[in-house]
Structures are given as structure tokens and as C-alpha cells.
Image 1 (cartoon, one colour):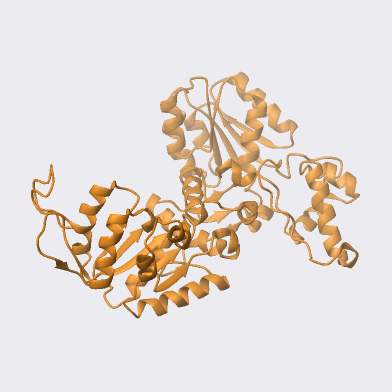
Image 2 (cartoon, rainbow, N blue to C red):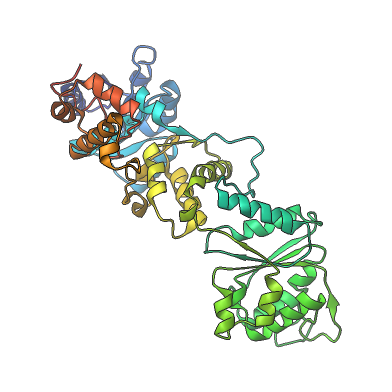
Length: 466
């Protein structure tokens, strides 16, 4: 049973909502203005507050922060007959969990209530996964406990101790620039400049000027002398991302820089020297580019003195919890939020998803979830649809079913029954022939977590209720 506080000056609406919630087995209290609702503090401990916007005296929007402070554990649902964008924005910014227009659609209200109550019960709270910020987290650090990432970390350590050129390969979004920065920080000149160039971002003429610089009057529009990135990277690191996109002309100039540590700015007559360490990255197979003639073979071998390959996220899913923790720490700092908990069903979706966009896609998904999260728990409804459309299978033993333990069989069967009933505990109890308290114990014992659209345990009370 949950407790509701309905704050609305519409008497008919109050009576209707009270009858509706009481019919579901909940306790409902009524107040007809903000002051009366706030006066209930100490007398009523609501799980959900239904708050109208336009009332005599203080409006619901103005009183919303006061209700959040007076009832810190309650979820607030705003209702109004005057639905407009500005009010919606204000309500969500001030801490409302949802915004519902009058006349109230009871199905919509029940869905909002179910969503608000889903994480209010102790057994569900215990199942949530917390990702607190760990001390000393470096926003630019790489994380991973998988064997393949440990090998990457070892190679970074060895590569950083020399000045050899490094070629970093891997799919887009795997974190190639992070590797380059890690090599720079662990190298001989960590205080020197780290200069990054996206070789695919500019047309050839602008890219050549950007990389090597130009003299005044070198071409139309060159009204001042421009210092190139290689000059700026002197005593530091030059990172060339998407190096496969370079034209043959710039490849030839780059080869000279790598071999001779010198370059010629556009329009200049004298060579300039640089000791910048060159680190290149690509998401394509440069060996194939050499074979089809689009990339110089001599430059290819000069760049890949040391090769570091970053695996796609789908090949190191055991790193997802560490990545989530590190990314959440940075996102929370940047957005000034404190969203540290995640529904275990979200993690199962993460494990089942193939991550075509790799770590960058995971970062974007978490950033969206934190930005739209009304509380401190990331749930599946905050994720992109394609991530939740893949349901992670229940982990089973690799043994054939005839060799399963009884516990494994029970776990699989209970989950199948729950899924077949849409997680309606009453109907599941009838099928399984067990009491609701026993079903609760088994759900907790087997660590079964309901999907986002499952009804809360106290809403579908049936014949087997305690």
C-alpha cells in the first residue's frame, strides 16, 4: 500500500482521485490549496503528491520546491487544465516527476504513478546498482578490467617510454584519442603541448595550412602569417586522427616530418624543425589502403612503428560497469547532477546490446539519461529505444538442461511465468501455486528485476496477497 496526498481546489477531482486510489488499496489524503497541503507535514508521509497548478493563494508551480523540501521522499505529479510549454518546463526544472493534463486520463495517471512508485519499495531499492564516484577519478583516464584492455595499458606504458611513432587502430568511438593522450601524459614531455588534428575535417588546402602553417601572401586570403600545428606541437605530441583521409600530397610532406623532423610552411623558403612526437589514428585498415594505392606504403611503415589496436566495446563487455562508473562521474560533474544508481535491467540491456558506436555511444546514452532523469536512478525508459529492444537473456549454465541444478530450473521457470503474465504477481502466484510473500523471496533470491513497464508489486494485489 502507498500513501497519496492530493492537492487540488477542484472538489470533484479530489473525490474521484481518492476513490480511484482507495479502490487500488492505497491510502489517499486531500488538501484544497498549497498551504493546507504543506500543513500536512508531520501528519502524512506521502509516497506520491498529486499537485494542481492553479489554486487560490500559492500556485502549484510556486509551491513545488516547498513540497519537495517538506516531503523529501515523495514523488510529485503535476496536474493542470492549462497545458502549455512554459509551465511544463518550469515544473520539470523544479523537480516534478511528471506533468499530466486535465481532464485526467486515469490510465495515463496510473502509468505515471507506477513509474514513480517502481523504485520506492525497499526490495527494489536493494536491487538497484550504485555507481558512486571513486576517489581520484581522472576525467581523461581509461578504464577496463578485461584481459585485452590490460594488454593495451601495458603497450601504452612501453610506448610512452620511447619517442617512436604510434599508430592507433580501432573502430570509431573506441577511444583512440584517449590512448594518444595517455601516451603523451606518460611520456618524456607530459607538460608539453598535445595538439590534435582531424585529418577529415578540412579540405586539402586548408588542412595543409593548418598542419604546416603559411607565410603572409602565400595564397589569396593569406593576409597574415599563420603558425601551423606542427610548430605548435614542438616539444610535445602531434595527434593525427583519421590519418587515412590525407591526400597523397600531404602524405609526402608528413613523411618528411616523420623522417627528418622538419617541414616547409606554405610560401616559406626555409625549413622549420620540430621534435613533436607523431601519433596517428585510423578506423580503417591502412594495409588495404596501401594495397589499393590510396595510402603511401613508406608512410604506413613509418607511422606504425608501434601499433595499438583498441577492441570494440562488444568484445569487452566485462568493462561496461567500470566504464559506466567513470563516465557517470564525469557526466555528473559536468551537469552538476547526482545520478549514481542504475536499474539492473539497464545493465542487462547494456550487456545484450552490440554497441556499434562503441564507448562514445555508451557515453551519449548515459549523458541523455542523466539529463532527463527526474531522480537519481537511470531506468530503461531513459535510454534510446534500440538499446532496450534487445533483452538480455537469462544467464544459464553451459551444461545441458538435464544437468542443471534444481535452483537453475526454478529460476528459469519463475522468470518465464513472470514474463508471460507481464510481471503480474497475483496471476504468477496462481500459476506457480505459491503465496505472494514466497514469490517475493524467490524474486529477491534469484535477483530477478522487473522490466520498466511492470506494475509495482502493491498495485496488482490478487487472491494470493498476504
